[in-house]
Image (tube, rainbow, N blue to C red; front, side, top):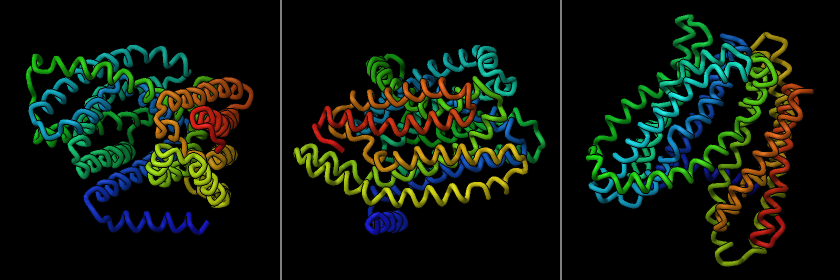
Length: 435
């Protein structure tokens, strides 16, 4: 276990004192990742403290629908922009064509999806049984369109290796949302207006990104972009599938709980889920370090060594993960008492404990979750994600009606644990080793 701590300390040291431009880029984006996680916690705490669990539940349902819809609004075009701008970053004329064509598609797909998003509000209100969610969706419509364009412009900056700018603009989004929410609280605006923070943030971000990005490209004519329009659309369509599945799986519990229960119960559940999700991000620290090693071992067919590396990490990681999980489960009730006097909110402790159990059991294997893709089998990686998502949907459908938010937590935890089984099965199939 000391090796785990040493590795973590080493990463923190390298983060504070980066040695080169590449490491500085990684550090900037690691900082942004931290801001993103903190922003989610602050948003949830502000809402439940000032508006209560019902508004928090409605807000998180709006966010689940909004983020899922955003995948269709941007249509995966950002992935094509990142890939091709990285490839042609030295050719200004080609870059102009790539980004202009991408923005044209983004304006159209973002506009169409936003329009249908608006038309679907009455259906969402009926499905989720919430007028608060319907109002929140209305205030987020324009933000959805802006989000699509921002995603494309951020991918452009990433491809141009403007990593500091990329990190700052990404971080800006997650700083501004809580600030807008705080302004609503100070102005004593009603709680259903909270999702307006999405729209205001994305609109301001779009202005800033457009002004900054125009330093690196200029708009070209549609005739010059025809080639790239034909490249972006099929490339984006392929990326859309994976992105939408991942977003659906990460929010299926909140969405389905909204269908079967009240906004208040969704809010209580969401408070526990946002804190549990913070723990689930810890393996990412190690995943970034292990992925290149996994690829190297697979490429050189050192499969027994690969299995040994994975088993060794799991053996060292498990007691560390268990210790953190137990500590956070014990501390969580104290935190709840600080943020809310509502006795109903204290029921989120059991939800948190159930979610943490599933996340803790899976956490070691999560470090190696991308092994199929790293081994050159992206199709098997997608299959693995689909299996987990299908399991999550089925179990939530089964457990929520009788057990409510506890059922959602049990379903989510079981799907995480079954994800280990799917992972083992697929790795055995493609590499012939038991992990």
